[in-house]
Image (cartoon, rainbow, N blue to C red; front, side, top):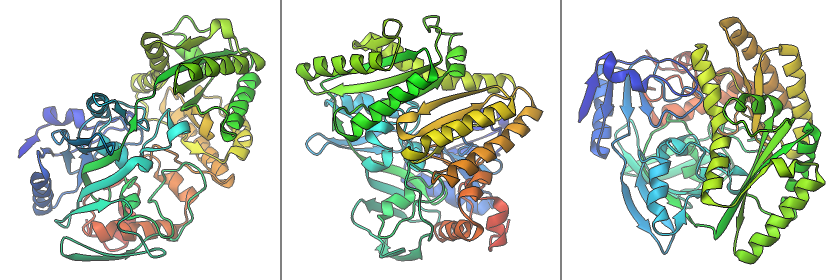
Length: 492
C-alpha cells in the first residue's frame, strides 16, 4: 500500500472549499478493499484517528483532518460494471462524477441527480447525500443509491442492497459477515424539507439510508450501485434577468406552481440576487442592469415538446417582466455550456474571495417549507441590513433553499457573520426547516446542529456512531465535537 508522510506530500489533502486548514501526519492511498482495512489496522496500532479524503469539493471541512492520518480513496476509481438493460452502474467510490458520467454516457445513460461539483468523488457525494442544481427535478443522490459496500473500522466489509434490510420501527436487527448487528436509531423527526443534517432516521427505514449522508463517520464507502436514466432527447437552459427582484420572485412562484400541476417539469430552478450579479459582472460583461436573475434547465422528450415548451417559457418570462432580449435561452451545446459555466462561476468567485482574505466560509445552507419561503427570504434581507457585511444570496430557490454567503474581509467581520448565521439558522428551524439542506455538518456547522436537535437527540446519534466505530477514530470532529464522544466513553 502507498503511504506518504512529510508536509510536502500532505498539503493537497489539508483543505477544501470551506478554507478550513488542517493537519495530519501521513496519508494512506489504498488500492483495494483489503488495503482499506489494512490502513484501519495500522491507524489502530499507531493509536491515531483518520479522516476520509475524496475530491475536496466540500464546503464544511468534512474531509479536512485536524490531526492523525488521511485515507484517500483516489485510487479506488474504477467502473466495475454498467448494466445497460437495468440502467445501473456499479463503481468504486473514488471515481469522480465527471468520469462516471463520461463512461455511462457511452451507453446513452446519465446520472441526472449528479451533484453540482463534477470533480467530487461519487463516494463523497453519497457520504454527504449531495444534490445540486438539478435537485428541483431529481432530488439528491440518495434516491438513486441502490447498493453500497462499506468497510467498517471493526474489520468487516458489509454489503447493503436497498429494500433488503429494513428497521422495525427505530430498531435494526440483521446479520452480515457472520456478525449480528442490533442497534437503535435516533428518535427525532426529520423536517419535511430537503435536509442533510446529522444521521437520517425514520420509522421502518432502509439501512442503506443510514450510511448515505453519514459524512464518513460510520464507515468507508468503497463501492456503490447507482440507478441511471436515459439521456433526455434534448435540453434547453435559460438565464433570465429581471429589472426588479419582485419580478424574479413572482416568476419563480409561478414556475413552481406549474410544476406542482404537472404542466412543466424543469430539472433546475436557481436564483441570483443583485449582489451575486454584481460580483459576476467582473467576469461576464453581458449581464444587464438588473435586480435579480433566474437560471432554469428544461428537458424535452421530442421535437414537438421542444417547440411547445420553449414558447411556454417565453410567455412566462414576458408575463413576469423578464428582460427577454437581454437574457439567454441556450439550446445548443455551446450555448448551454456558457450558461452552465455562469451558474458555477459564482461559488468559485466566493471561494477565491475568501482565500484572498484568509477567511473561513460563513454561509447558510437552509431549506424551509415552500409556504414559509417568503418569510425566510424577508429575514435574509433583515439580517443583511443589520449585519452590514458584504454578502451574496443565491441558489436552489425551486426547493426553497438558498445559500446566503457572507463575504467577510477580516477576522472581526467573520466572527460577527457567524453570529448572524446563527440567527438565520434559528429562524429557518423555527419555520420547520433545516440548518443544512445539502452540504452536511462537517466541522464548521456543528454549532448549528445544536439549534436543530437537543442534547439527547445528538447523543442518540453518537450512540450509533460508536456502535459502528467503537474507538471513534473515523472522521473525528465531523458532525460531533470530539469532547462529546469522549464524555460518553471514548478515551483520547
